[in-house]
Image (cartoon, rainbow, N blue to C red; front, side, top):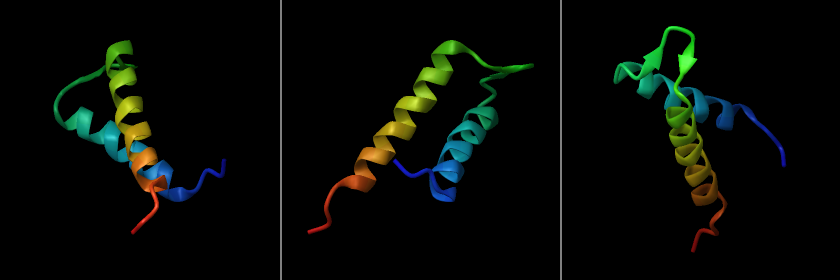
Length: 53
């Protein structure tokens, strides 16, 4: 797997969206929220890998 700037930006955007919703703790995210962010991130990664028809 190659990690590029695009996945970095997508992950940061997911984290910022949660911050804007007020779901951030003083020192990070709750474990449940970390899981949700990663599920959203991974779902987007799978969508990107689907062939375009």
